[in-house]
Length: 178
Length: 178
DNA sequence: TAGTGCATGTAATGCGTTACATGATTTC
DNA sequence: GAAATCATGTAACGCATTACATGCACTA
Image (cartoon, rainbow over all chains, first blue to last red):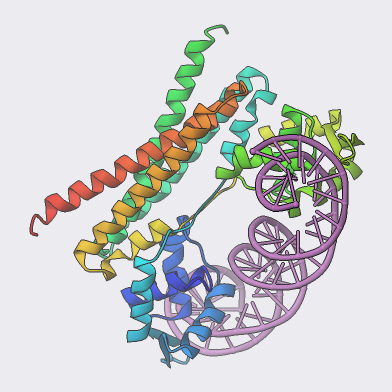
């Protein structure tokens, strides 16, 4: 299943519920995009490959005069999903520009350096607003594990905001001059 | 400075100290790679572009019979670095396969689902070992902000391991059956 | 009737990794 | 004498984003 990064998220979304490519993209944007994004340019071609491999089946189900193709997981597709869930060491990649700025912040005068920490804290708080909005608007009773990852996002950003504050305090304690 | 992701890390590394492309790559691998990676295929071409734009200057400084080109930041280069440090909203990208597995873990039987949380905890702990190794072997007295980001890595992974444990407890409390 | 949402799809582009090639020097 | 390290560089490849094109349907 190392074919493509989009494969597992498609299989997973179809395991939760059969849908169209468009609906998969919409679900990703509401949920996994924070830690696993996907674009149309990945989803549609991959759906065709998955169908060729008989891991999903698609049927045309026009809604009104609007064409639409609904995909569902086959038994083979579910097996591949389960194998992936049980599979080897998962990859984790992080690209955090704010952390990189912190890394080089000695290049700035001291006052401005701590401003970077405040910016980072603000970033966490903005993220929190978005995630709390999602949690409130929850609407559909999500599967427990779906809620678990939302929980992670909220907890992580709370932790991150606190971390920034703690470091700011530490810095201010170390150099009490103004 | 949105040219390329590698630009800021090169300028920053040269601000810390003039070095060769090879040494930049080595420094990145020891430090920022956890949140901002870079490869030779990015570094060498970008160094030439930076030199054309007069943001860095290179001089040939063979060590023994071994050819070597040492780059240093120009005044213009430092200005660009400072602008970037003060610049707009920083990008954050996360690709976390372990979280994606957690998201779809309802597809697994209950016992195996909590194994995913344990895997994740182990992942954090392995990461911690690496980072603590770096912190111990510290050797060179790093700039304060360089230590700040290492601190972040350690604190984050400690938090992450604890989070997994907490969720495991919660799950076990909810379904006390065996 | 204009705008928004549903729906599918592709082409261009950009970006980054991997793998390879080359060669000197130091260390075991 | 072999292996590791220093050092520079490029070509191929894969992957993902962006932007665009198309068209129907609903609603304000």
